[in-house]
Length: 76
Image 1 (cartoon, rainbow, N blue to C red):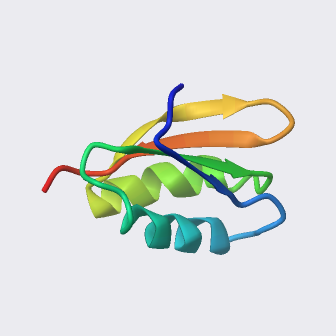
Image 2: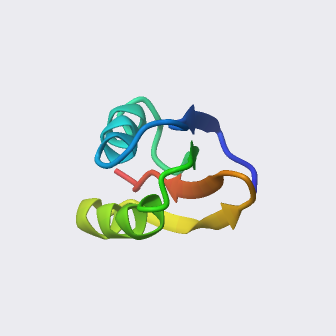
């Protein structure tokens, strides 16, 4: 998946990947996509829940050695 920015959260554990994501999302324009790379397995449940709570769009997960999650910043 194509992302506008990538956030490396490898080595960070709950709740830091979500905290770092929230900080980075403030820098994005509405509609832009953030790729978050993490090795904390909790992100698979945490990121969809955070998106639901904040109104951002959860686009999906890709798993390899690390987990990559994709979030689109909400409009307006």
